[in-house]
Structure formats: structure tokens, C-alpha cells
Amino acid sequence: MKNIFIAMTLVTSLSAQAGGARFGSECGLTDGYHEGSWVEVGQNINLTKASPSKIRGLDTLVKQQLIIAAKLQSSQLHQFDGQEEAKISNTQEAVEYLRQSSDSENLSVSDFRVRSKHFTQVLYYPGDNAGGVIFEAGTTHAVAFIADSDVVCK
Image 1 (cartoon, rainbow, N blue to C red):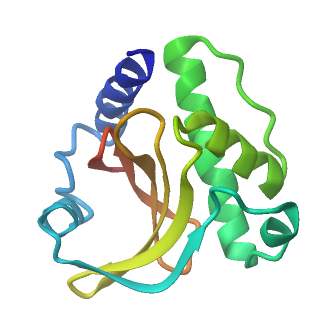
Image 2 (cartoon, helix red, strand yellow):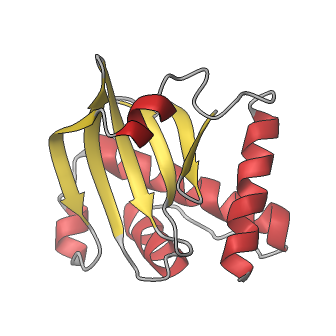
């Protein structure tokens, strides 16, 4: 129940931070993302039970995206639940934090396309529904958040 409250609060907060942007209105994701018109392309990395050596072997960009996703999750939990912000300084800490934040310890990084735009998502499950961060493909620029399985443009 606590995770549902956090996820709902996160959606409200992120929407406010996005200047009241409607779900997916600015980044063009939600329509395609929820209607199934997105297509998986490129990498699909399952980190649920990844060993430290697999994590060390990840591409530099993926490592940076994981650290950003973990810091954003930690910041939101600190802001809305009063939890102490996690000290995340490397990819191993980011992966462990996101797995521990996930009810089922599921964590993945995958590339997808909506229409002609390419994205990378870091996806985990802080409750019964998905949470995560969506980046422009090939960058550390977060364009949207996934909270309670809804996509909210940044």
C-alpha cells in the first residue's frame, strides 16, 4: 500500500515538475507506448539477477542511465516519504538500489521505438506496476518517467 501511495505521489509531483504537462503530451510517448505501437529495437538487458561482472561489463551509457534512474527514485522517496537519500556513486550501487526498490527485484534496460523516435527505458517495479525512466536513445537526457505504469513527460 505504501508503494502505491509513493507511486501516485510521484505521478503528481512529476506532472507538476513538468509544468502540468499531460501524460505523454510533450514527448509523444504515451499514445504509442500504451497502444502497443512501440517496437522493441536493439538491446534488452535483464539485470534482475545480474552478477557484478555483468554489471561492470555494461556499456558506459547504460551505466550512466542506471545511476540517473536510481538517483531520481531515491530523490522522490526522500521528498515524499522522508527516507534518507541513497548515496549512489556507481553502477553497482544503482542496480542494487533499484532492485531493492522493486517488489520483485525486476530490473531491465531496453531500447524501443515509438513511430520514428527511439528511446531507452530503465524499468523496475516499485509496487504492482512499472516504474522507471525513459531516455532519448543514445543520451542521458530523461524525457519521461514511468510511475504506476503511466508515462509522464519530464
